[in-house]
Image 1 (cartoon, rainbow, N blue to C red):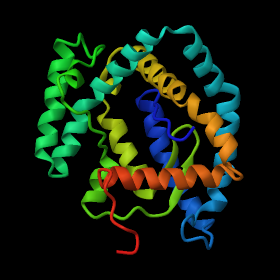
Image 2: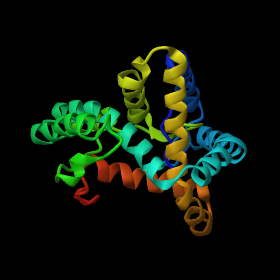
Image 3: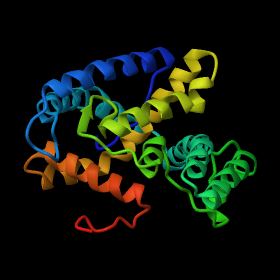
Length: 240
């Protein structure tokens, strides 16, 4: 998995936050000499753990979902979760000073939540309102917070230090975590995780065939993608 986002409830989120602090301390103790991957001694074992979890749990479930669920229904599921996230996307757009984008994000939320039937249909895109992809890690980057070292976490995948903390804020701001009862919130989070993992299935073969070192391939792909996200697809030259 290149990048899977999922959570199974507030209690798990608190455990991740505490565990993340402990793991960051351990990662610091295992820091290596590679400036692009100073915590490689921590990351590779975590990557190996994630590969086992993915092989025997996440990927098989995603494959069953992908094969069993009709394409229109899968599209509706993806649209629903995308719409649920547009409010937080809009908040981050505003925090980054992109007020026009924030207006579009909130307009998308309003249109898709009403005309689009709770976000099942992406009517806003049909009307020409572009969907954006902003999170708190990107907001911190725009505010000048450095990325820190690269980290690889089981289940949630690749992050750096800044984006790990950004993910924690995103988790607590997630509207699905406010749904009650908790069993419904957990079910929605699990469905979103499976839907995202299923959407990544086509990339699995590409990674397997292209990568001599799968860990390094995913690390480099993450860093390049993240840089493009932060600079909205127009990153400056690295030697500038």
